[in-house]
Length: 53
Image (cartoon, rainbow, N blue to C red; front, side, top):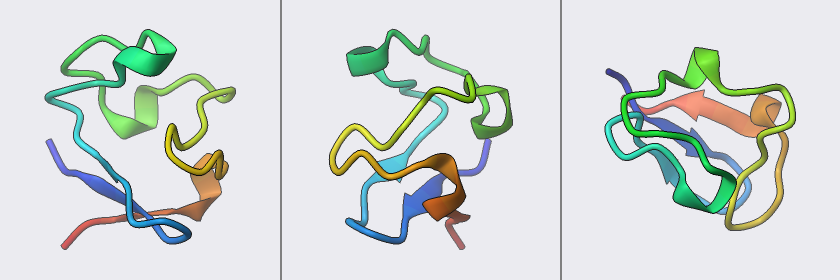
């Protein structure tokens, strides 16, 4: 699964890890995140994320 980077703070969302701060289980693809999910570091909305290359 691809990782995604927050363009505001540089946080990397790695699907293999999920996001325990918002109860997102491991192996959750970025596209499957709930619409309410925001960057756990800076609070940016999902539209601030880009696919990491």
